[in-house]
Amino acid sequence: MYYIAQGLGIIALIIAITSFQQNSQKRIVSLQMISSVFFCVHFCMLGATLGGILNGIGIFRAAIFRNRDKAWASNKIWFVLFCLLFTAAGLFFWEGPLSLLPISSMLLTTVAFWIKNARAVRLVTMPASPLWMVYNWAHHSYPGFLTEVFVLSSILVAIFRYDLLPVFRKKD
Image (tube, rainbow, N blue to C red; front, side, top):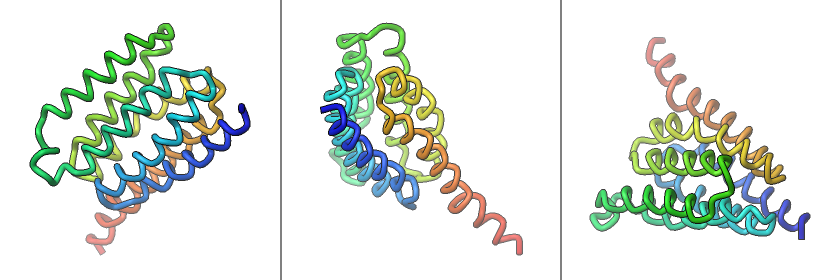
């Protein structure tokens, strides 16, 4: 069971890494949604219930935020609802002070996914990774830990490709 959980985590890792190389908010969020499905199962199989629950809520958050271009999904109630759900789930499935890390991370990514600008999504998501790193390591989610290392690297590469490189090219 442990190795199956780690294998599902590796699949989630690959999907998460590629998400930040996308140049649109919709594509980033879509791939994050798929990654969350695998991480939800991964964490539950490892006995990290809070991580699994938060990723489960994250699936629905991504499904809604992916459709932000539609009137029903652009209502601010969704943003507030998901912030409340992540906080409530964290309190209900409290694992001690360590729980504050993934809860804070999910709140940051909720803000990031609410933003329609891909550059802002990358910048706001960046501080969420170290929070998950600690939680992942404590729960033996090595693919989760590596995901956050690669996500940070991927975000930095994407910032260079999409945000900085075009600025340098314009000056030529």
